[in-house]
Amino acid sequence: MPVHNKISGLALCLATHDLLAKNQLQEITDNAANEHKSLVSYLVENSFITSLALAQFCEMEYGIPLLDSTDLNLDNIPEKYINDNLIEKHHALPIYLQQNTLYIALSDPTNLDALEDFGFSFSIHTEALLVEENFLKKAIETKIGGSEFVFDHAAMSDIDQVEVDNSDSRLDETQNGDEDAPIVKYINSILLDAVRKGASDLHFEPYEKKYRIRFRIDGILTEIATPPVKLANRFSARLKVMSKLDIAERRLPQDGRIKLRISKNRSVDLRVSTLPTMWGEKVVMRILDSSASNLDINKLGYSDEQKDKYIKALAKPQGMILITGPTGSGKTVSLYTGLNILNTVERNISTAEDPVEINLTGINQVQINVKAGLTFASALRSFLRQDPDVVMVGEIRDLETAEIAIKAAQTGHLVLSTLHTNSASETLTRLLNMGVEGFNIASSVSLIIAQRLARLLCPECKIKETYSKDQLQQFGFNSEQIAQEKPIYKPVGCSKCNDGYKGRVGIYEVMLFSEEIGNVILNKGNAIQIEKIARAEGMHTLRESALEKALMGLIGLQEISRVT
Image (tube, rainbow, N blue to C red; front, side, top):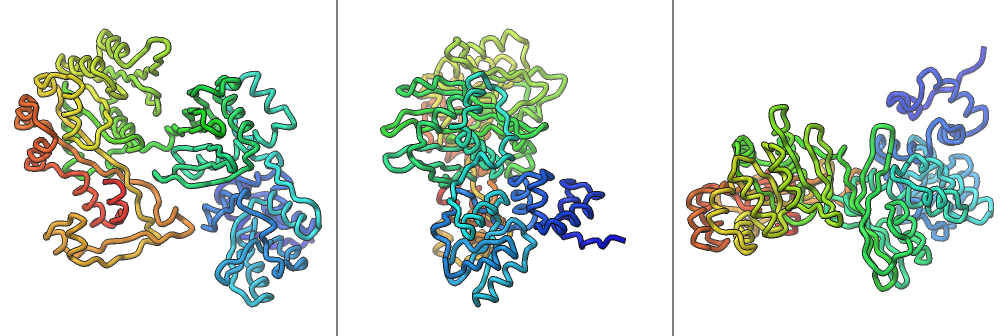
């Protein structure tokens, strides 16, 4: 009878998550042993799973950081820790030394023997870093085989899973060109990495002696890669081809879109903007991932009182609900959360947006096209001839749009929209400054929500911080809150988060429009007077709402200072 080798924990874990067939595990294990290969090498070489997919799975499942291949410089590897026998035996490579810790690159997170052997041989503490199998194999061959190392993203076949739905003949030509193939693969890998990390924006930035790629993750820009500056024009050309923009036009800004199909069941829209700068074209991409949007009002961060005010305003047959805040503060999600509550068979709902960010079945969504003459104002006029119950205007940008929206709210329709203002009270004075008459504002607006997004503290690594009563008072805590002596936390940072933060939560200022506030508007009062009345009527300011989140252990005081 044949002797079966022991099935590894990694193989069992992959099978548990349906990434390998359970009835193949023994055969795979035996074949890998017979060929004297590690399980990871055998799986990737025989196309059971792609190199990138396996690395990403191991990062999520085992909590070991995945090293970006572009961050690994083989010239910086500490030569004194290079031992050919250990490297070949464990298929592992020491990559750098930091504060008496030797970091070992592995493609198999269960390969603990490698850490022990390297640690024992050199009497040093070791830590693991994940590296994709394709890249690790090539790096090892370079380091102990003497071959020249050239990083080629075209070798990473897993990146072919990205498809551009709006492709044309130019895209096919680019993909088939041998010279541009590495650029295509590299850009695709960057886009996949951005989606995987939950980035909201990507920045491709050329400078005189440097090219920088940054992701905005949880509201903060982070440098991801610095490819050679000589590739700047090829990067911008590739991104413009994907966006169906004019690749010959480098003097004027352009706007476009890309639809990426990540898998059979998931696609992501990218809004693309190019801008000519001194050293080339900067390209910024906004990721519009509707599958990642959470439209459950109970999970957005509203307090019970704020949520109750929003739901009651949505239940009214007419009036205007305005959501305000800077770009990237989550206004769209708040709007669509409301629309999702209203989305029933009995209601006719129409939206005018630029762009349409979240697709909802049952809602008639219109993409604004200014070049073709389809503006917010013209779309809104058409809506009013379409027997609407609920109308959503993506943004009130001018007096014409504001007046039509207000007229709709006054004639039996529920209108939802956004403005870019800093607080709920300033929204009313902004409408006055636009030229809207005070009596029209007083007779149409029913609720205003100002909001920000604050980074959540990582629950795995956050620690308590001690503050004096004077410090807490300076932050804005009242005596009653200080007397509660609830713990305040601060970020630390671990392998499961970004510098101590993981995810974001909404901070809200929800203001009901009352008769007293209406009187201030009619008398052309200012935002300070409006806010004073609203607070007397029970409104919590953005700062006060953020302090409550801190007492709940969700955010740190540093984050409160940043967002409010």
